[in-house]
Image (cartoon, rainbow, N blue to C red; front, side, top):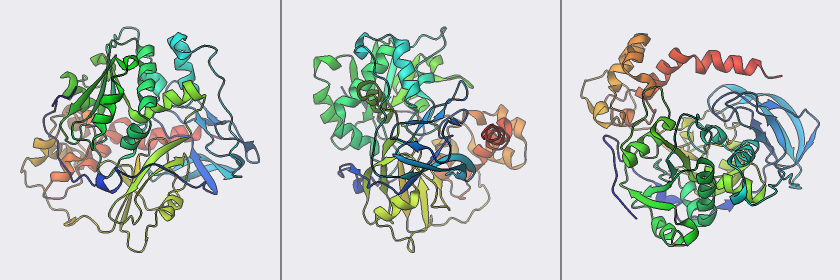
Amino acid sequence: MFGIASFRGGINPPSGKEQTINQSTELLPPPPYVVIYMLQHAGSPALPVVKAGDSVRVGQLIGEQSGHICSAVHSSVSGKVTDIKRFPHPSGMLLTAVKIENDNSREIQYMPALEKPWKEAAPGELIQIISNAGIVGMEGKAFPTHIKLSPPANKIIDTLIINCIEDEPFITSDSRLLIEKTEEVLTGALIAKKILGTKTVILAIESAKHGIGEIISETVKDPKYKDIKLTGLKKKYPLGSEKILVMALLKKQAPSGGTLHDCGCVVLNAGTVYAIWNALCNNLPLYERIITVAGPAVRSPKNLLVPIGTPLKYILDYCNINMAETKKIVMGGAMTGSAQSDLNVSVQKSTAGIVAFNSLVEGSKRYNCINCGNCVKVCPIRLIPSSLAKYVGKNNIEEARNCGIMDCIECGSCAYVCPAKINLVHYMKLGKYRITGEYTDNFQKKETMQP
């Protein structure tokens, strides 16, 4: 069933999805090596449980959980561990990672199987397997899924939302997953529903999403999917942000500093519920994912199934990108991803795509704020980005906090419409980092825990 739920603010950037929406997922030829970060999720980094010289198999645990909010990390290839040290990370920092030389034998180490069908298992048993599999949100902050599925005892969860919006320009990895693995995604959603005990499962897609709604509509007619409600929403960015999606669908907003558990709901994306299905039905941890490689500078745009830890340069070469003509490469989406200067960085669990541009943004010279209010009109959280940027620029961090900077979802809508070309998202992130210390002090503290 399709509705037209929407939200205040937002923008409509060019889609760019026509490059890859009809491109079936290809299996990337095995890379010669992978570099797998121990911190590719929200929370604490995993601790390496292998050492240089060890032989590993696909799916073998190489990083164990080190704290309450953490995720296990597994090898994506079979071969030999050649190094454990700090490697360049897409964030621009150096973070601990395990480098594995691929022997191309693809020997797989499966996780222990449930002794009963998942429908007969207790929620705690299912959550433990999801935790062991290292499953996280497959976009954005990559929050560990076993934590999301374990709300506090005083929080009643009545709605599970499967986020299939995929509003980032160029990215179609989730779309291809929905087309190619429809039943697997829906089954993963039912597993999550069983864990949470919710009455309602809403599968949210854009109402004009290239015929995908029709494919899913036909599949959910099967009685086994009777508890899944398909809902279409009007195309607008950043509808794919989970907080905005909940506002659009349920007309609820998490309190400042709170979580969606406070709204009685949990949001998981398509890639995450597919990974849940893979863990419970195939006994496989999360060690590979689909990514989209697209953009004006990409001669052969593709959707690729790649091992986690695959070097960026290897993927770019495979997609026939002429680096001499390429001006900017972004890992993640064009709106929220990060530009890369080092092509030795690697794909993470949350890397939905790689976007390459053959020209820089027109008119990128920055001017002073003209107080036009455009940023205020498009902010879906109803903040005043221009004022927040000024507070941060003057190091008035307490005023920025009081005016809601910690509620910013960093969608980039404000920067997109700013006629003065002010990088407002930079100021939002900088202000948050100065408040929490997560970008500097906490990262340094986390890394010193590693060998």
